[in-house]
Length: 364
Image (cartoon, rainbow, N blue to C red; front, side, top):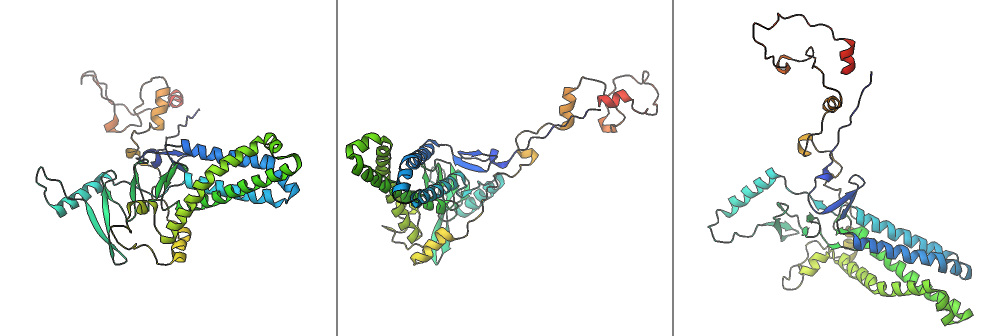
């Protein structure tokens, strides 16, 4: 007797999540949809370091020290690890309100603001929240139907509210928020050191070769080195400048979004309630504080009624593949019995059920 087993399709929550994110590896990898500049970042780092390890490192290890390629490899691996960790992780996306929750929030807002006359603009949807004896406003997100937590903001590119939103970085292909900011900072810091390292030892390589064969001959023989020097020269200023700017923000426990809006400086003249007034404490909180877990539950399994369409059961799938045959009625209940269209005169007297035959069991 052959048994046909059909596995039910499991719908995971990441398949139904709103927003403009893309997921890979069954929801384990989460990125923005615009990933072209991220691929450019990978190409520049991998290409430059490949040329450096293939040509300059061997010569410098023999002429100067074998520690040069070892330290370069450590910086390269650390930069790649922090880049992928920043790009592939959840930055702190806040789930949207369910229909029942959104309706309850709307009722609360209407009860607080009252009925708005027709033609008048409704008052702003804001809640006041106190942090360190200072009032912070919680704004309502019309897309996610929630009051955003403090320091959260809605990313227009990913179409999601992100907790402690810093900015959307196309170079890493993801938002930078509470759950991946420390990895982003470590990435740009290690990339700055790697760029300075490769640029400096490329200059040393050209100088050592020029002592033997001349400067112009060295440039003719090593076009890869010239390309590396140009790439490092033009990227050095932006990467080092970005690292210095974020070092300043970390020391103040401030985000890029807050700095651009002038939340704690300028005309507002409001003191930052999240700063401890100490650079060391601020750095420890931002870079070494506990990392909150993701609240999305991307790989969770949706219930059958919420997954959109009900997958066919094993009995339905197997019966569609078998030829049509009379339905045995000995295992059906009275509510499941097929209707009989014969008249009372034509109906035979009830007979006791017979045991199923071998042929019927085989068909079943």
